[in-house]
Image (cartoon, rainbow, N blue to C red; front, side):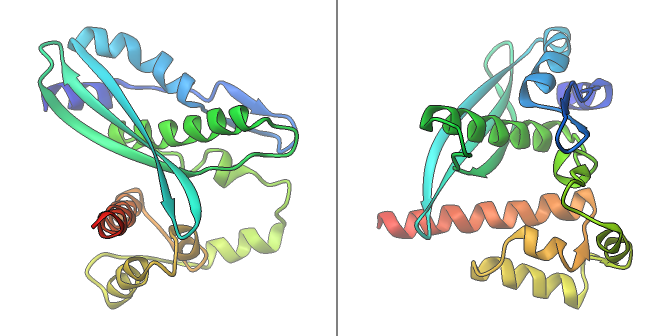
Amino acid sequence: MKELFEIQSKLKAPKGNFNSFGKYKYRSSEDILEAIKPLLIEQKCILKFCTEYLEIQEKLFLKVTVELKNIKGDFLESASGLAEYSVQKGMTPAQGTGATESYAKKYALGNLFAIDDTKDSDATNTHNKNQNEAIEQSEKDWLNKNTENYNNVKKALKSGKFKIVDIQKKYKLSKEIKAELEKIVSEQIEKSLANKNE
């Protein structure tokens, strides 16, 4: 796992895009890939992407899994990203697919290479937010592991009635906790699909 450690410790993925409407900078999957290619060459590693569509509760999701392999093709590590398929106003279906895949790929790369996006577009997009929301955010409690609240959150996610975004409305999540919760959601999705195929 030395290769992954070296890449994570050296990777710097700048936010190379600017949203003029929301007035925030953000990084895309292309920004991450451009930053990571020299490190992959240095560590003699390659990335392999696998994309699949999932239908969950009558909603369509796109899941991207990224695998890190050494030059011999030996598997080192993998991570996934999930995004709900949507076509924004003015987009063609093909553009909607491309945008959804780009989001899922970005999340997969972020999970694999420990890229913190807490200050990225989703968090810093303030064109629909006000000071009251900022105050509300600062007053939230952190969700800590091995607590009753943490166990309740896990049960809520496993029930399928809540999403991580719902949890974030009530708690502040550290990068580690968020990754663990995303893993729980991913496992529930896979179980749901397995049951559907039986």
